[in-house]
Length: 501
Image 1 (cartoon, rainbow, N blue to C red):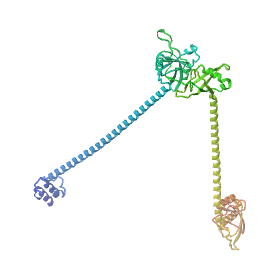
Image 2 (cartoon, rainbow, N blue to C red):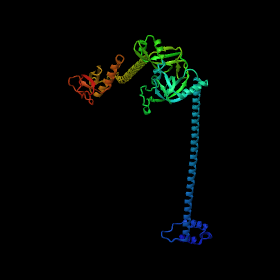
Image 3 (cartoon, rainbow, N blue to C red):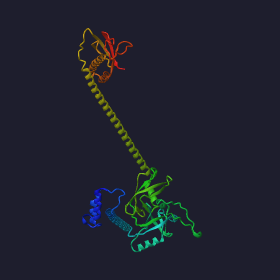
Image 4 (cartoon, rainbow, N blue to C red):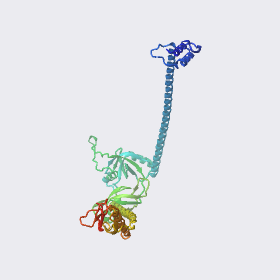
């Protein structure tokens, strides 16, 4: 064991700085003195100072773990507290919203109740202060017609309890005059005059005409009475029956269902008077049948308008009153007019679409023409520029030694131009082609103003690769890599410049 290690161990056994062994100061001194040294070899004997230090380390680690666990628990508690507060806020907000919703519903129900009460009060005032209403079973009744009553089309049999209630109102001075009632089923309504108050309990006997206005079948079979008793009328549907004090009519407008009524009926007023003689009331939207003996046909007329127009559901009384009548165009005619108007609108829309399509085609054609003109102008400008660049070398004089010169006449196949030039026989064929291209461009440049399209074609031709061919049948092109002499060109030659193959 090194000497330094032995000294450290000895000091640990004796106590550092005279402190008692096992005290906290002794442990700190031991850590400062011994733990800073090298680790004891594996298998070395454990001294009391080392055991004390291990104990302190374990206790510190345990304390650290405890503190960490405590901090984690405190953080978790804080998070749970925050979540509880959030949940409480949400619950309070939801409760507030629920109370506000209930308050709004309550206020809406209160307003609706007040509105209904106001309507009932208004209706009661319009009906002479009488507010009689009942839900009854509608049954078919032909009692008025069977008794030979002239106004049988809308005479109804009501139950005795309504008669007693109405009589009590009359005795109290609240009601008087004819007993007229409104019958409602869903969105349909009709008005009737009371025939009697002898209907079965909780039923109202309605004639076929009124049943048809309510959308009920008037052909329901009768049911057999109990214990072999008399037959009972079939209960069709529950309807709402309300007392109405109808004003006397002064005006009524009718609309025939078909156009033949106006065409076939001559004395319309007399026909309408006979038709109204079978009714005690009229209701807007009601359809009445009018039989005409001269044509042996029954025409259907719809009540379009009545006057006075009061708040009694569009109903008026036609008993003991003079009624001014009017005939509107028939429903069939209105359908024809609507169909013609629809077809006219379709035709106008079709014409508008065709005009729009034609305008679009014209615009596209104009745009295409403008694009073509622009492209042509651009091509013309490019051709002019290309020809001018090539023709710049056309004015260069031919400086040739007289002893070695040759005269060439070259026909440019693409442009139809013919150029003449003198050149030395030692001149390269490629240089001759360039010279021919320049001269041909110069000739084409002169024709720009007279024929722009031809000039554009010529520019495309002369800027393309060219080859020179002797003007002989079956001749081969002159090799571009050689000279005129090597190609066998004589003193005077005629050549053709054409597009290179």
